[in-house]
Every structure is written in C-alpha cells, then in structure tokens.
Length: 312
Image 1 (spheres, rainbow, N blue to C red):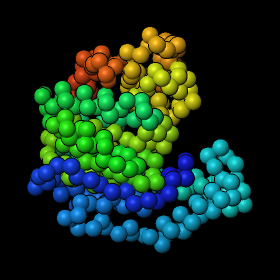
Image 2 (image 1 turned 180 degrees about the vertical axis):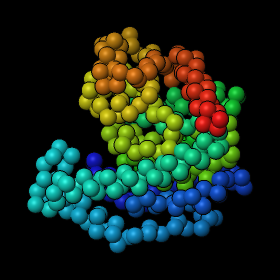
Image 3 (image 1 turned 120 degrees about the vertical axis):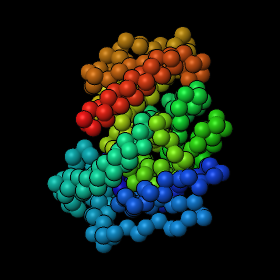
Image 4 (image 1 turned 90 degrees about the vertical axis):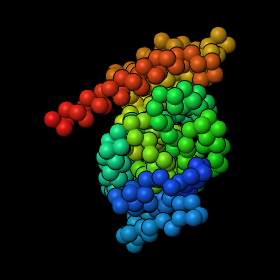
C-alpha cells in the first residue's frame, strides 16, 4: 500500500520472458518471501504459488484504517478528518517503508554477492525510458551481462521490446499499485539468468512521486526527464530529483522545435539536489550515450573499489 497516493492492493504478477529458466536465482526464495504488505508477486504458471502474507490480521487492520483515513479526507498535504490522526498515518507509512527497506537490504546484499551493478530507472510516463533502455542494453550487452526488470501496471510491451534487443527481461505488472517495491524486484530477479559482473536495470512504473520513496536495493536511481515536460518538473516533484544520482535530459533532438531552457532545468534540479549529475541525451539519435556509458563505467569502478576496501 502507498500512503502517499493511496494505491490499493491489486495482484501484481511476474511475467518471465526467457525460454530457459533452469539457471534462475531460486536461492532468493531462502532470503525473502514473494510479497510485501499485500503486494503478492505471482510466479510463472509452472512454479509454486507465492508465500502467504504473514501477520495478515495486523496488516488488514492497518489497511482498513488507511482506507478509512482516505474516506475521511486524510492526505499527504496534512488535512485529516475524524477517521485517523496524522500521527497514525505516519506510523503506517513508516511500517510499510521499514519492511520494504529491510527487503531492499537483502536485495542489495545479493546484488553485491553477484557482483551486479543495479540502476533504478524512473520518470513520468512518456519520457522515453524504454526507448532509451532498448538502445542502451543493445550496446552494453556487447561488453558485459545485462538484464532488465520492467514495471508497468499492465501489458508486457516494454519487456518484449527489451527481449527483442537480445537481453533477458522479466515483466512485473503492478495492477493498481503505482510503483515497484523491493519484494517485487526480489521475486523478479530470481527469474533472470545469472548476470554476475554485469548490470541490472529496473525500469520503474512511470510516476514522479511514489517510486522515489521505495528503495529496491539499487546502487543508484536515474531520473529520465524529457524536454517536452517543462523546465519546472524538478521543483514540482522534488523528492524524485533529490533521490536520484543522475538526471538524463532526454529528447534533446526536439530542442529546436520547443521553447525549452536547458540551463533553467539544470538550475532547478541542482536547487533540489546540488550533487545530481546531469547528461543530455537523445534516445532516438543516440546523442549523449557515450557520456552515459562513461558515467556507468565510473559507477562500476567506484562500487568495485568500495567492495574491495570492505574486504581489506
């Protein structure tokens, strides 16, 4: 459940798009169950059903209380009715995020053990995440193993595009949920082939609000910003840009057709996050992708150095 937007518990499902799952990461099941606060992840038909939600009675009480708060007018702006106090809403949110962060820590440890660099790709709908990702994985796969977890409310369109580029992909359909969470990612990851020493991209649901709050175990968040969205998006949705390490300004090939101020966009983003890296790209033409790959290589080098230092 998302206490920011009030998304409800649908039935998220994992659609495995690889023909051979014999080398999937089944060991993940030893670390984390395939659900998190009602976000059940359904395995492919030839596998066992998901584990049940432990503590369901307690969870149902929290869920009922949250829905009562929504009906009575409680929201993230601080307004509340008689159904629930703001303090109670905050406690529920902390409970949900706390459990998610625990699973994210397990994910992160597994990714480190697998020598895997993981990026959480975020944007509003239509910013060009998938087109950008198709180009990137098509070129990066020549140098190292690459895999993708795709998050959308419905359809497997994006994962099919990734697979057509010759890269393994797992589709997670979140139903009524507006973001991926750590349990969904963990369940999807065990359906991918081994990617040791490679890169995993997680393409999150198109949304500039809720995905920013959920740690998936990634090394870095990357926000894709399209020049068609307007310069003030970093100020309107500050949490997303504050949480991201890199902003990719996409569709720069359309700049001559739009009244777009690049400098102002960068200024606004760094007003929210002074440390954010910024690259200008075109997913359609490939402009700026060399700089993107150099940035990825630097993250890989930095991560490897940190891992080696911790082993000394």
